[in-house]
Length: 347
Image (tube, rainbow, N blue to C red; front, side, top):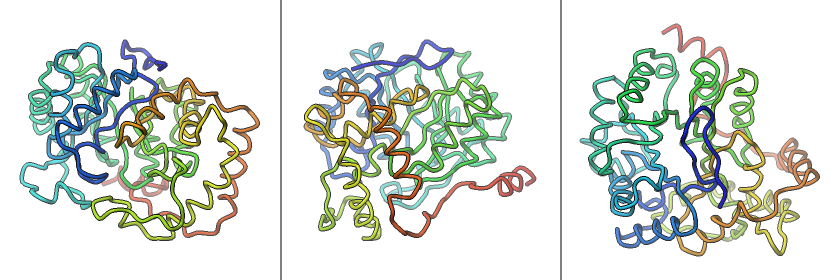
């Protein structure tokens, strides 16, 4: 494993992290608590130190899992978690795909942090992230002041913004970097889905910001693992079962054009992570991990051969023409043009 440090901080993270979305929500299959903790322990043994949770994942379950796994070695791991959803009365809705009500009031955020600290059985969170922040949160001075106060109080070490779940949220990310110089920005970015991630990362260079990036969905919901075919079917409790079939068919066709990245000493899944790690502002990548074999493959990615200049250029050329595939543009959820961003500011 290799490690990177967030700019202007003492927070150092493993280049490959572990997102607890897969172990706590049931959207990637079911895990017992014993199975989840065993997988987390194995990740630690393989050098992974960054663990990304959210208070709403399993209605607190992901944070409980971290506490069960690492309370005896708290100083050796980095906890990232998220806030902003009120799941207290959500019931089964918290397990589904529908979005829960959000609450970013300063009083609610303080209560949410104290609840996370209790579940995590710790006195501080290393990286505390706004979960799916909208433009109104990016512009809320009181919220950013609160995060600074929580840092001074020693309850958090860094704060950030985590964007998703549908790829998009362009200006929420861009303005968090340009206007707020946010220490950590978590975005969707991968070889198949480069927009709007390219623009969100370019924002840090344009603004001279010190933002470090945490990358989620680095394998494009599993496509870049290179194991699926057009005939693949997903089990009923897998969220990908609800995607249009054309998503899988087009994705498999794109992946076949990236097979040149496979080598005897590097899998396609590892190459997908190396493509991200070629960007120095990327601090850590969060592959979806749901079994021990996959964990071992991805944890070894930083030690696999880095992508060459020629390989990076070939990927860029394929992406520029969308791999030669005609398809409808994705349905973005966030603010994708400056006119909408300005309208949100005017409200």
